Length: 171
Ligand SMILES: *[C@@H]1O[C@H](CO)[C@@H](O)[C@H](O)[C@H]1NC(C)=O
Ligand SMILES: *[C@@H]1O[C@H](CO)[C@@H](O)[C@H](O)[C@H]1NC(C)=O
Ligand SMILES: *[C@@H]1O[C@H](CO)[C@@H](O)[C@H](O)[C@H]1NC(C)=O
Ligand SMILES: *[C@@H]1O[C@H](CO)[C@@H](O)[C@H](O)[C@H]1NC(C)=O
Image (cartoon, rainbow, N blue to C red):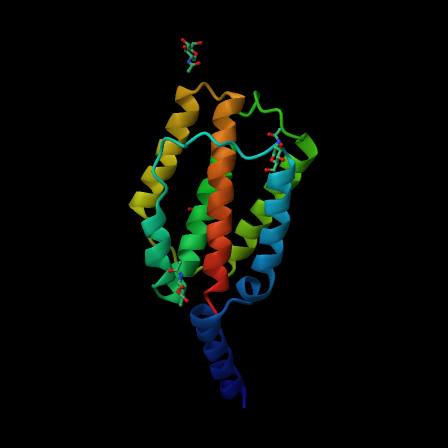
């Protein structure tokens, strides 16, 4: 009886790893809606100015067609990179501080909860890392100005929407 329970647990774990971490299935979308609202409301309209870094559209296409475990890794990495981006110097931003704070807390919560879904780490995707490095370079080159941060906000919004779509297609 005991070994049966044990076997059952193993099966559950393997299954949840392969086919649906509960957090992603039930909570990801809700939280995603909440932080996207904060992102929208913390400043004015999203800038029309073009971001001088090519968006890694192909990574999303590739991830959409890959296995669940790799999709979860991609969610983990991308959200982690975004949270790191928002660790840069934000002195110049004029956004609503409360909404900005809430945005970051919610995003961080998403990342923390994803951790429980993510499988043993693999080396982060180089292309993704490189892309986020380029974004940081843009910030630096533009002296962390409010305008530079508007570009980051625009790019972040696009990522978070794409991640949301990705998750919607995962089940
Ligand atoms: C923001 O966008 C809305 C809708 O597109 C537009 O009506 C409004 O004038 C814009 N506001 C500013 C400050 O550009
Ligand atoms: C992602 O894959 C699903 C099927 O799994 C498909 O319906 C959807 O169109 C794809 N989306 C993109 C953006 O490729
Ligand atoms: C999730 O992302 C973080 C940051 O890159 C990394 O440290 C961690 O190992 C990742 N988790 C897995 C299991 O890939
Ligand atoms: C950034 O700041 C440096 C030093 O203060 C200045 O020389 C440079 O022109 C600034 N660049 C931009 C894009 O504002």
